[in-house]
Image 1 (cartoon, rainbow, N blue to C red):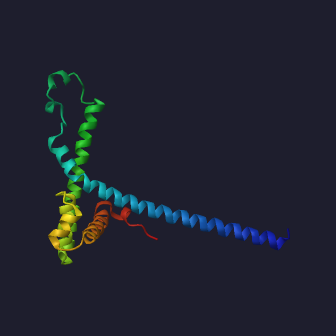
Image 2: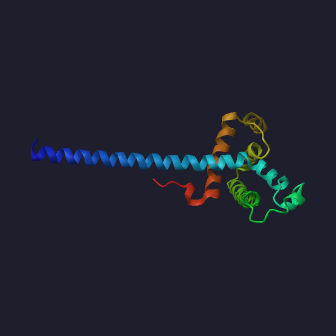
Amino acid sequence: MTVLEKEAAEILVRTAALEAVREFEKSQRKNRRVKVFQNAKKLMENYNRICQSVQEGVSEISDMDCAEELEEFSEEDIYINSIVKSKLRSIIMLAHIDKCLGLLETEEYRKNTPEKYLAFKYFYLDGMTYDSIAEVYGYGERTARRWITELTNILSVYLFGADAIVLD
């Protein structure tokens, strides 16, 4: 192999490696964007369950039916502390979601598209189907899906900030 052939081969290998790294980074950015969207969607799908858990769940020893039997456990008991911490995290997350929903609602009313926010709310908080939402507004089911996806993407930014935005 001549010197020119070796140099050409090295350039080809470097170029291929750079392209592979670019493709990998692009794939990682896309995966991150999808994960943020899925996390926002998962939070909204479980919003009512989280609310119910916070309202009705046991979070203190005094809330237990058999509190006398549990008094021998110290406050440092890992299991009980994990329940309390979980409830606290849920309360904080619900407050954050509620604030972000308020921002989303304000944005949609400002854009003069309150029906999109209401469709979003109907779907996630009231448990309506895409078809039911479409009937309410007289649009197709695909329109309801598009609106909810669009607002879930916007909510992702409100919920996760810069982590929701993937710069190319």
